[in-house]
Image 1 (cartoon, helix red, strand yellow):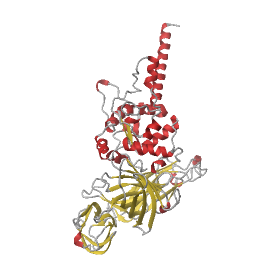
Image 2 (cartoon, rainbow, N blue to C red; image 1 turned 180 degrees about the vertical axis):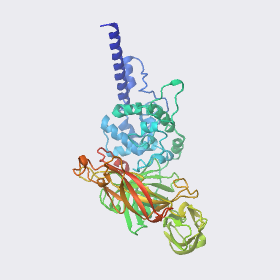
Image 3 (cartoon, rainbow, N blue to C red; image 1 turned 60 degrees about the vertical axis):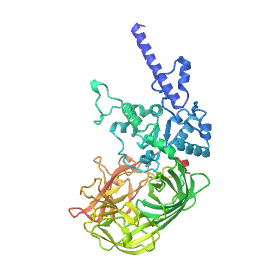
Image 4 (spheres, rainbow, N blue to C red; image 1 turned 60 degrees about the horizontal axis):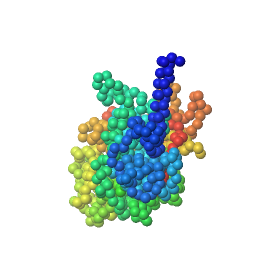
Length: 598
């Protein structure tokens, strides 16, 4: 064997050994084993491998006995009460539930549902997010499908949002070492992650390296951003730790709930403290403004970190499934304001959490409170229009002089009044200011609650990008999609799709589906499913279809089109709006965290 061959073989062996050593360090770090100790025993030197970063930041001590008992066996404690790994991360209740699932599946954690609930509550209190940190990512626990406009550039999209929502990493706060270890976890557990992180990205928003230096890897760009955006220590969390208290949410809350396809519901939720601190029972009564029907529900909820509500409610036995909204058991995810006077969130159900009320809560008080108006908006130039104010504590002797609906809107008469509803006759001037008006009842003012408009300039179908899932068999449930058509006034600037546009609520339309052509033989609209007159899309069954070319499944891409019945464009033609819908195969692998809401 030549010297060159010997050197080549030794070099190859060294590279292989180095790679194996790096992978071993990654694996040990991910499973929370003391990798540095193991390798130090083998080499007699502390490790210097970047895949096993040394923690340099101050951790958050763990003091809860249950957390120490269940987690302390693998996550060792230091003299300050920090548990390895755990003390250098913060996240939402769902994030901690995800950790428990992973520890149980991969690392042999033995934990009962009661213990898991206690661990989630304790860690959410001491290693959670502040209200300001959690609010921008609430759409993740609310199971909303949104267009994530918060992704700063394409490089970070590729690294952090190709496989899951960008809200997933933004739901965490980590030390620099922990963000680096998260990268290692992805490389070790997901085969596509390493290639994804190293794939070159032609992103014009990224600066060109000076002096011909190589471009950074996508994951390096992402880590730089996430370390600045989501560090372990933040002013928001420091302040919230000083402020955090038991939520004390007992009492009456006024409810404004929009259900796509059904419209506005208004009512109340009575919250009663239960046995444990921050545990509650609920009694909910809602009235549909569209048809006058009433929903009566009972439920329970709990509060994490002093503001983050998770609950369930139904009108029948727990776990009951039904087709009518009033009979479904819903899951509830809500964000309560730090002053405990308001909340917003979503009450949802469905196999894909695709149905749900968009909810706003206002705490009832002795002062008159408006939570909604009906109709949703008033048109400029209207005379003698009937307007209902819906809320609480309206005085019996309410007079027009007690009411202020903003410039150009005059209350001519109070037709009737009860504690929860005031019926008014109003005149709206032709030159009334376009926009969302405040409403004042005496000294009580509700901001931006009454839209005033001149005309419907355009329609927007929501959601404007939708996903439905084939199914309907015993093995795979269908993923439905409900659409609404919302009218908009273009606002004071007269330009559509700008910040001053005024949403006017659902508009009366007819519905249809049209082909979204991608290939010359496209016929998706014939096979993906059916759209009802009320814009509920029911997907077709999953599986090969012999009636379709090549026996393809019933997947496809279509437009969902709304045509206004009365509103016209500048040419006198009916206004139209449309949304893009992908009808995909079932999600064959899914996970959920029902214990968070129980």
